[in-house]
Image (cartoon, rainbow, N blue to C red; front, side):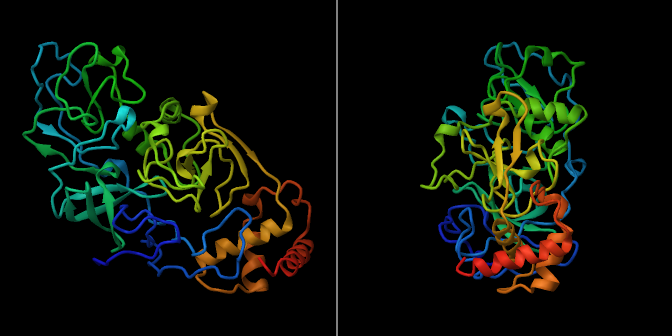
Length: 397
């Protein structure tokens, strides 16, 4: 389904300037649906909802990292390449991953993506989805991907993970340089087989990892193992490794070019993962650095987020120099009503919502996830009365 481009909310980049970050995604299970209509009934969302309804968050099942083809073992996986000016070689070079934007470094456009190649593409929710390359635009560094639900969008090289190529020299994924000398040698990920200079990778790779018996996973693979809908893993070795990775960003935050409201940037670079994102869906904004973070990548959530829910005080791991900080902010009945209308406008794709059959059932079903501390003592009958009063008092919104 090679279409010219999806509808975008006002203020979003044009379709040629980004890889479809604002494009609607369709579900594999259940069947896909059309683009939601504008929530015209909500004239003034409390925290600045766009004038047009944003696309729905993809609901396809996250592609399992185990489906990614891994490169074969090498003679010495993490050997020290001590010979000067000698580029180490290996049998296969695996897929590229998110580039490190620090110090102005950008990955050279990949020459090895080909039509009909299976890839994993990171979407605006921070998760990867399986698709097939239909077109390759080397000049703009992107591919046109057909996903499993038959939707198709442009995706930037930096947000793609592909199968390995053969008979290619080993180079650093981030700087494309094949030089491997102390104290900045190329280290190979034990899962994907991708090579990284010790100082190019974020955080930098310690010398202790160079020992052959020490297992090491790159940043990309750690995120693929740990992120999920509703919040990333909180316990176990994968969660611990993810928290360590989140202490540093894979890009220079000050180099991003933001809009006046600090909601979108030209580089399509957000969160700890450096992938695309939509601020008006399930993302948290750090109150210090003001960067946006995917629900799937944060480890501090107790309950899944709702679309457009900005009633949180959040500090990211980078700014907090450790685990994230999260505090639920209090909501009034009018805030609750507007938030519910916003979510229903995305899921029901209707201009108006039925109070008894749609609004109140949604509130009662998601009551625990809303975490309304001051309102949780109200009975269902009292909730209905309060919400109805709030809607009548805010007709102009």
